[in-house]
Amino acid sequence: MSHESIRLFLALWPDAGVRNALAQYRDAWRWNPKAAVVPKENLHLTLHFIGNIPCNRLPLLRKYLRVSFNAFDLRFGRPDVWRRDVAILRLDVLPDSLVQLHAALRLSLQRLDLRVDARDLQPHVTLARRSADSISPAQEPAIDWHVTGYTLVESRLSTKAEYIVVEKYSCGDSG
Image (cartoon, rainbow, N blue to C red; front, side):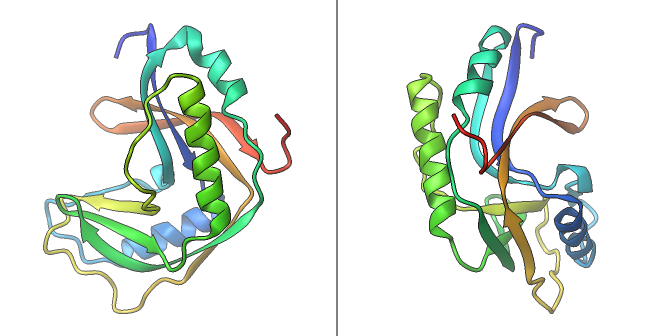
């Protein structure tokens, strides 16, 4: 990535309590030796991957990715391994408010002529990659998360992924 562009995504970013609960559950797995466990500070739920954009577009994005939404609750309780051995934690129920937030952000991205993933929303938190033959804990986690905001995040890729919150949006914000 050059200094003229920035790699971005939109995500639900957990507070310290939820992040600790996710990390505690992640640490209860028995990982195979090749597993690449997601660091605690990188645990999140991606809403939309945007990709590389010119840095000069960032002020416009920060402003126009602000959408109105209602707070909602998430409950994680279903571990799974999918997509080339990616260990994830799924939601028990997909709340309507999450679907509406995802759709509103998709519309904003389209209006900004940015990439939009055509796949349906499959909300999850990635716990590890290369996790084939890893064993999840016998007990499901039952992690509750009261969501009152989302974030615009920069993804820096080098020897490891580094995520930097660029903008925080809350349900009380007005556009």
